[in-house]
Length: 424
Image (cartoon, rainbow, N blue to C red):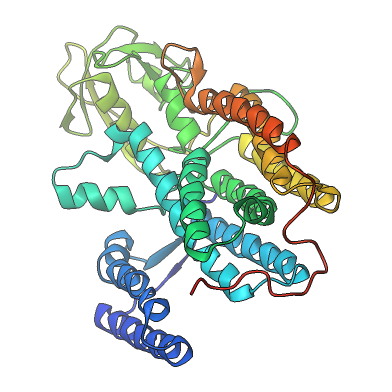
């Protein structure tokens, strides 16, 4: 796990806005010169304004004293987009398609996919985004630097974007989905490596040779502490919503044990902060880490604090399945399968149908290994498993539809006639 790869020193905000203004004007002048002052050129205005908003408000908000953090999750997400676009351009060139239109499609897909993936995550985990003000809440919602995207959300958002693109440019929709399907799976494959660097989308505890441990305060570590699977500084606290801050277990031989803490004691203060419930106590224990830091706990009937100095490395999580890497390999294998099947297609839509058949099955199975999502709707299945079953049912219906269509593809390979032109 490496959520932050490095930092970029953040330049003066005025200079950054000036660079944005120069880039925006240059982009618009180029588009006007190429297309004239019409819809094609003006279509870039919302994107440039969005970039300006990010430069003015988002970057300063997510910066830290070292500068602008470059997150592993964001880097792999960007690499996934670039790799997916490159693969689509190569396949489009072999079909003689207009590459500029493919670049426009990439923008539509990226925007629709990101918005859909983020909205899905926010709806599923909405309680994480409540802040003291509307502005802080909105900033938390758009801050993607720590992850927070759902693949199925990107499917819905990207699917809507494709439908709008097909309507605007009057292109064959099923042929278009076959063109982009392998790229989407390649993007998923690289994006899951970002999940591994970020520590999200983790698997359950296992003892296999390739099991991995995530560091202190990582998502698996925090979750295992909540479930009383591991000790925090030698303590396990009562689990459950709004549970009282009671010591449930003390690790033998730990500093907590030597300080006289015992099961059943109520924790009153941690580092001088009054504790209201077990959740707050866990957060305060998690926030205290690193060799040389002092931990102070007031518990039981004794008002005197029990203190000790933290030594040695911080404890890691229990070994877990590297589910993120499983998912990355899954996406890559499905991508390769689609590319291998492509020359044998008899009808447009087959690659889409294979994707809608294979991916839900592998995702359903992956959810058995993952432990980061709870069951929903009294089904005993996670939300992703429920959606997988729905998509698989839709894939069966779609296969029946395809089999009833006459053979033929709109964009055969090595056909170098321009096949996509902008609508007039």
